[in-house]
Image (cartoon, rainbow, N blue to C red; front, side):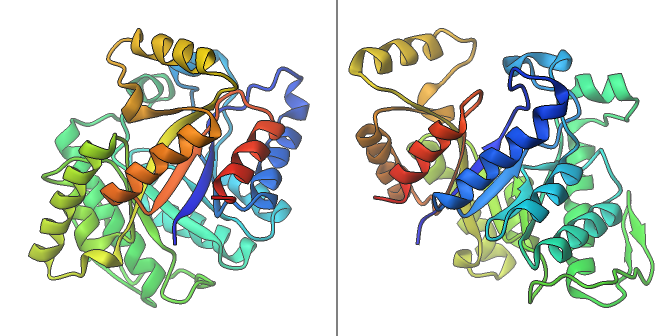
Length: 311
């Protein structure tokens, strides 16, 4: 069964900072009411340049997820995805487990290699080369998985170590908290997914994703793991339009952006057009669609939810 998630990528709502949380709750509750399976936030400390950059509001991911857990009842909650450079992985496991307890078993643990060098420099975090970040990601996924599923695991890696690690209380979810890995690197990231993760999250159009999923399948074969054990998700920005002219203008604007590939990063069009695009991506192997709708209101989230869950 195809599932849909909503990512909340920004906290700029045009009012005072004291109203930010209420607006986030409104978006999350609207997503829940209209059938979205999950709600996600970015794990960044500076807002990204396309959404205004460091001067715009940004809330810490696990703090806001815990608060949303107390204000929602059904949706799963996670960071899409947690940068491995920001926290010790045992700390991540503890935060995700706390979220799981708060929500009665609705946490998803998102992990990625991190990439936004500006916030690392600004806030004093080390930003190792890409190869080291990928190695750290591989170790972090193993540690989180062990702490979710074992009573007192130990792990002796190059970058991270735990010894008889205690994680009490235990996750509520039977079998441990699902781990999502974000990123589509074919040699290392997808290999880490195949060996240890429960979900992968990718960007891309149907052709790209079909190829990436074939790569993932081969990694699963090498690891001796059933490919279908891994949930395959895609993140994109949805722009619902009200006319052919608006769709054309939006696509033209997106095509003018540097290095933009509208079909890979965006879904633009009327309800009918968006659903056709989803059908094509489903045929390529996508099982779980996560959409963000920057600067959209709760009314637009409701419109999207009703469209997606009326298909």
